[in-house]
Each structure stands twice: as C-alpha cells, then as structure tokens.
Length: 492
Ligand code: NAI
Ligand code: MG
Image (tube, rainbow, N blue to C red):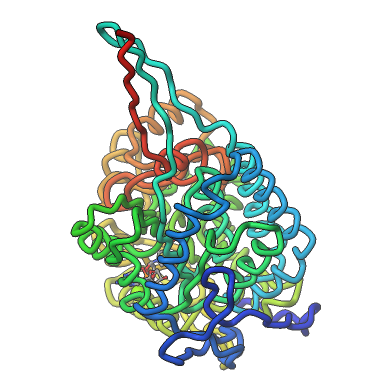
C-alpha cells in the first residue's frame, strides 16, 4: 500500500487574519461567535475564526455598495484598477511560499501542489484580468433612422461570491480577477473549512492599494452567512462554486431579488481511453485527473471508460502507481496525497467505497482509511464498474477511481453523456478524426484531448446541464460581471 512521507520539510505558517474584513477594517463578528478551522492532517484546531452572520453580511454589503457608488473605485480609471490587480499578483508572488504553506495547512493539500499549481495559477489569473481592465468596451451600432447608438459595458455592481474549500486561493483569483477588472465591488464568503488564505489575500489586497470597501470578506457558514448574502437586496449578482445541491438553493434564493447568478457546480466527468492511445500518457493523465487534490476536483475524471483491448494493462499500471503513492504530512515536499478536507467528506467517501463493494465492483487497491490520525483515504481503485452503480453516478469527491469497460466508438458518446452533469471530459487516442468527432458529441463545458486538468486563465471553464450556469475565466467571465447599456442619441 501507499507509503508514509517523512517529517515535514516546512514549518507550519503563522496565522495572522481571523476576523471579518469589512470596509477595510478587521472586526469580530457582531454576535461575537467564532468557529474552529482544523488542520485535516492532524484534526487539531489551527485557529478560531469570526463566525459572520446576517448582520456582518449586511455591514459588508453596505461597505461594498458605498465603495461602488461613492468611493474612489467608481472614479478610478480602468487602467489604474488593472495596476492594482498587478500589484496584488506581485504581492502574492512575493509571499508564495507562505501562502502555499497556509493553504496546505488549512486544506490538507500537499504543499508541492500548492506551490506548483494553486499559487502560480491564481497569480496568472489576476494578471490576466489586470490586463483586461482597460479593454472592456462597448460598440457603436448602426440602427435605422437618424440616431447614433452605442453600448457601454458597466460593472454589474456589488457581487456576492461564495467559494468552496477545494482550491481556496485559486477560487479567490477566479472570482476577484474578473469582478475587479469589470469595476465591481465584492463581498466574499469563503468556505467554513478553509477561511485562512482568503483572509490573508484580503490583507494583501489592502496592501496593494485596493481601496477599502472594494473587497470585503465575511467568514461563516453557508445556511447563515452564505444565505444572507444571496438574499440581500443590496447585492446585484452571486457567483457561486460548490455543490449542485446548494447551487439549486442559491438559484431559488436569488430569484426574489432577481440577482444575476453564475454557478460552477459538481460533475461526473467521463474520461475515455481508446486502445489506440499512448497508453503510458493516458495512465499518467488519468491518474492525475482523478487523484489530484485528493480527488476533490469538480472536474475529476471519475467515470473512467477504458476500451477492452487495453483494459487489463491500464488497470495494472494504475494499481502500481497507487502502491507507490506517498501519503503523509501535507507540509512535506515529498507528499503526493494529503488528507480529505474534513470528517464530513471523509465519511461521505468511505460510504461510497462501501456502496461500491456492496454493488459488486471489484476493489483492486485501497478502500481503507490511511493511518489513525487525520482524514486520509487510501488511493482506491474499483474495476468492473457498471453505468448504473452509485459510484458511477454520484460525485464522490475523493481518491476513488471507477473503471468502466467499453467496446467501441458507437456506444461511448451515449454512455459518456448519460449523466445529469456536463462539466468536463477527456479523450485519449492517436486518431484525430475520432478525437474531434467525439469532442463535438460530448455535452460538457470542457473537453481535454490527450491531456487532463489543463487550466488556463484565458480558457473559459464551466458546465453544461446540472454542472452550472455561465463560465469562469477567459473573456467569458467578464461578460457575467458587466451589464450592457444601450445609449441612443437623436441626431435631429
Ligand atoms: P457546499 O456546496 O455546501 O459548499 C460550498 C460553499 O457554499 C461554502 O462556502 C458553503 O458555506 C456555502 N453554502 C452552503 N450552503 C449554502 C447556502 N444555503 N447558501 C449559500 N451558501 C451556502 O459544499 P460542501 O458541503 O462543502 O461539499 C459537499 C459536496 O459538494 C462535496 O462532497 C462535493 O461533491 C461538492 N463540491 C463541489 C465543489 C466544486 O468545485 N464544484 C466544491 C466543493 C464541494
Ligand atoms: Mg454543504
């Protein structure tokens, strides 16, 4: 089975921000309540964090509204907004090691991943949108009659942003980047499991010179602080990333005030391996596409279809990779897999493993808790999985790979699309006709060909069907942070 990584190569980072950040000031919650954030590797408490609620959300929305309508933000040139975003990115780069360690501590992800993926992607995202700030503009439009018509693209206003715990820093960047470039102001609620890096980034934003009230952060729980943000009449838009279940609640709660909503939700993404692929590349990419981030990825390739002829070889190689995978302290640079984020996720995953066994899938590796401290789950592999098994239908969000066999191209598009989700998919083959034909047939927002989890700030990401509404990243995301205004002038 998986091996234990040695002692941590990095000391635990210092926790400096634990309160609500409202109008540029750090304040305890109005109720005085706090909640614990845990280190998922040890189950020890890292810090007490202010537990924001409706009253704190209200104060934050007022601060954001004021900054939007009266503050320096509303008068600032777009290019200067861009400069502040560049500055924030630079400060993050200067603190990369410390931010990565804090992310690793609060979330449990291996620090090598935080350093190699989360931080560089987040910094790149902010720089991408920094460059966009002064390039958001309308059109002049020929209309009938003696009129001059032009459009303006104006910021949508005060935006509420609710993010999950799986990529805390990266989700901040995906949300703040386009919102700030567009000229919006923000109230963010980080996930209750991982509030620390978001609060740290709010401090860096202030240091960068982003005016007070432009970014507000209220830590707290979903049904209280989160729901208050979604229902608040002073909020113009909600951008949410998280479960499909909560996405539905948000749409419903946002309806009363006609808020704009963008939702980036769950998935059950098909990863399709044809027998004419580069097998080693497909094995490595599929392993990464499922086990990366402890399997806690909305786009995880969790329905892995492998064509009959290469099936057994493919499985053997995955088993070998799982055997040598290093589980251990996330702060150790050698660690490849850390714990799941919390007990709830751990229990949910163990429940799915039980259901896989009960429904007759073959357990080829893992299946157990790893160690006796922290929320670790062994890298787990099921084969002989059929389309109707629970583990093939529901989002597991853990290190559990399910391999389904397939015969030929004719059957695979229908099977790949036989899900309520449509976030991502991947295809492994050397046949370009097959690859592009299938890519067009798959009902998903992203299709990777001969690769997996390739993200770029410029490439839109989001879901078809129940995987969400709208797109993040790229030019697409800016569209959802702006309103089009049509101005028509009579020329007499
Ligand atoms: P969740 O959807 O409950 O939490 C995500 C965020 O929404 C958190 O900030 C939470 O506080 C907030 N929230 C919860 N209820 C809310 C409400 N009524 N109104 C407003 N905000 C609310 O996800 P959770 O419970 O952490 O994980 C459950 C499952 O969701 C996971 O097992 C996984 O399958 C999926 N998930 C998907 C993610 C994705 O990236 N698409 C990220 C996290 C979880
Ligand atoms: Mg929840």
